[in-house]
Image (cartoon, rainbow, N blue to C red; front, side, top):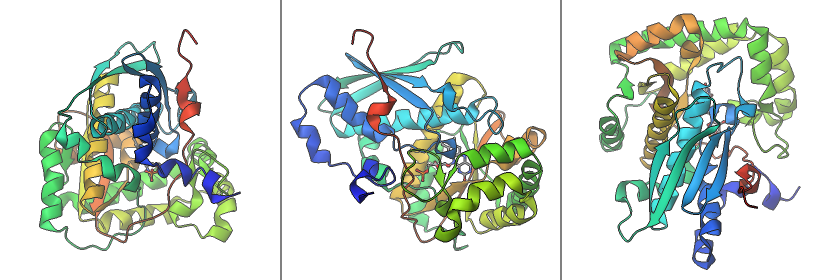
Length: 347
Ligand SMILES: Cc1cc2nc3c(=O)[nH]c(=O)nc-3n(C[C@H](O)[C@H](O)[C@H](O)COP(=O)(O)O)c2cc1C
């Protein structure tokens, strides 16, 4: 397979000058959606669909991509869709649009939001400042280097925390060890569940450049020659005694742990996902690294303990570690933008 058609590479290489050549609003929206699909998503399920409308895009949750065991209430699914909305708005701002979001709260519909765009000579400077970070953002699951974060970089992260004070909660240094223990324990609990291991295995991909979704085994640090067996291994074996301590080390090596909190309703989760992507792009732009350690939130009986660590009134949704480390250059695959655009009703 030539590199130009590798779904791990091609979607990330967007020639922004192409936008100048585009004449129709429809094709401009399609171009902006190429940035939306670079958003992070739980297990790289990419659980989104879009419909291009005369004045913007409608955003749908794709429930056919649910993680029924890991994420039975679709919380991570909705946050992933929220992250894609943020990328769309950032790209819109970069190319000279304002983009406003209207949410659709009815749980019986897949349509979750409508984003309306309008050309402007004054696009949101905060949004457009994050544009360059979109293709540079990658989840880094390697051990971080234990070093304190450069104060200037941290102050940029703090700006985002202050923008979304209800959403982000920093774990106090005294409680970091307790959080790491909880993560280790939760990972062991999760790994005793064959159905959960099977679902994880379903989304681990061999490193063959053929898949357009899921996580290539390589990004977990699995050597390339073992990558094709990684999915089988996780499905077969109760690997908690190995994974738990590894994840504790991942937490210990981070400079900061952060808990994302939000109510469990659809709109709150979409908004939490939007705020999350602001944070992850700022982390990227500031030269820092991050990854997720959500195990203790995914185990129902432990979720309340994470909320207590966050000292928040609203439930815990995600746990993120932040720190410094060598950046990862492995890109995860994406579906093509055409495959996530639903036909318009009149076409
Ligand atoms: C809501 C949400 C939950 C996630 N949960 C986890 C997680 O529990 N463990 C993990 O390793 N990565 C997690 N991720 C990261 C995704 O696996 C990652 O975004 C995806 O594989 C695409 O890779 P990229 O972020 O490098 O583009 C999560 C991402 C999102 C948006």
